[in-house]
Image (cartoon, rainbow, N blue to C red):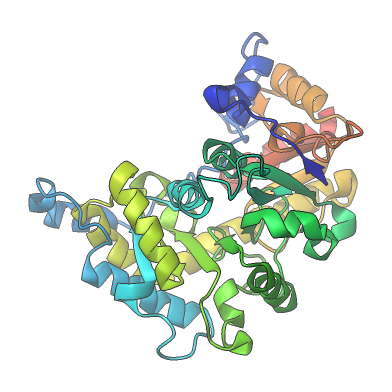
Length: 407
């Protein structure tokens, strides 16, 4: 466990993993692309290559007259109702727990929502002048916005190690009491990015119980909730009933980016405790961007439709089956619970990324760029690379074959 401010607030861009990747590779000529690819392959970024349903464009066009209007702060009534109805279908939420007007907020994606939620939940002033700053608990490895938001909010990021030994999820019971007393926010991504590990109901309930004991907020980043390989992963709202039906200390974040191949739409939502939703809404009104009405019209229809999601999920499941055929048990490969990333143990992630770019025109992300080192200098991501399985089956098979040959 590492407690330190590793990021300069004035230089957040230098910490960004893709800035670091450009610095690593941009002066190295790309090798010949794998069979089936007409140009070098970017397997480094989790950007869907498939398209959302055609009705997205139809809905945006049909609502084009709304582009001249500012978006309503909390979101349109029909959009909030569609999000709530999806939550009711997807999770075991007792009737009456989620009120769309009180407990749901439209957001331009989970990344933006998580950033502003950090700003809204981290206290800006200490109780005493010499008090240490509030803490944000972050899994290590992690999605870069978690740490960037913590530092921007003036908090101290505490990185909780995740590894194969911990099931690639943090062990919250191991966090020292003095850290828990200072914690303002805990962020958990499940299924996780990059490893694809999903927390079970007991783990989710234990974390919420811990948060209520020490009065910190848990932001559950569930943007990969619909991209799973075997069974639907549990979500935080699955355990609300067993904990008394309260939404206290809880925010969940969902997005259409992965679920519906609509990363460019910038459309999602947060749900949770009314006081927390109001605080998030207030700070979004000051410094954030609402979701435009034509976008919400398309988003409403996407949240109402589950059929297209089944095809998208099957696409990624097929790619994982290809990975299993090509990689077998090499590089510590196993099919994850969810998401669409491979997290491969290649010994030295940076060296592997350079070789793959130079010899095969394949761009992957070194795991070290998603992690920070502990006090002994050990970086839990250093020996890994992250690969996004976002291309079609032919390209995926050829690319993984080249990766296996080279590494």
